[in-house]
Image: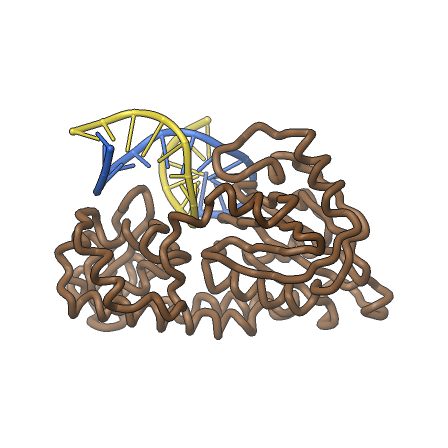
Length: 309
DNA sequence: GTACTTGTTGAACG
DNA sequence: TCGTTCAACAAGTA
């Protein structure tokens, strides 16, 4: 599942490849995906028509990110807001004219990620391809197996801002405003578990299940502790761990999604540095005791009971 | 067939 | 009213 580092990585890849390109045509196979965010479940034909009409012929002028949201900006102040949720992925393939003679999976094939790309999905489009943008020099596909994600069109930047969607989001973990002091103050009145706070988006954004467990392990903090019970020193350690891990993950992820050929390697890169996530029952890399798995807010949580107090 | 997984959030809870 | 908890979304995997 893409967390902030993967989305940031995807943003950079898209920026490199689609910026300046015009959308020649758009195909929407699943109206639900373009019909709204979150709980809006009613697929609207009008929204689909607006999406296609509004975007056809427009040029990409910027690719931005807020938390795990991608903001694709187009000429005439038009915007696409995209969230990959668990299984969304954008894949860009240059057209044959641009990449002369290639067979499936050739190193010359440019692909961007999100959710890790399955080998079985290396043929595009496939049954999980729900939106297709034909660009001047290639094709941009949106795939999503579980369809939790969304790709929503806004006719103006203002119409996106009007929804106030970003208003209650917390700080970006890599923003200079995300300081240890801010973090400490934000946790003072919070009674819920520190893991729940990290998973929530109102204090710090973009830290999902994986990096929450990894950060708490690195800071040696038990995920079940209430946020307000943490000492200032512990919060400083946790702050440092979050920033370091997210930075590191962007760096490692940066080399992992360039081509299909790197796929297997990329998975290794992504998972290689995990110390607790997905390692329940294995030995703690620090003390050798067995890592334990519990549920916090219906989310799998792995930690070392002897290291994390 | 059944349980489990995942990010985010509106709804329900106390 | 407010802070906190939880179910729901979808579909693949074990």
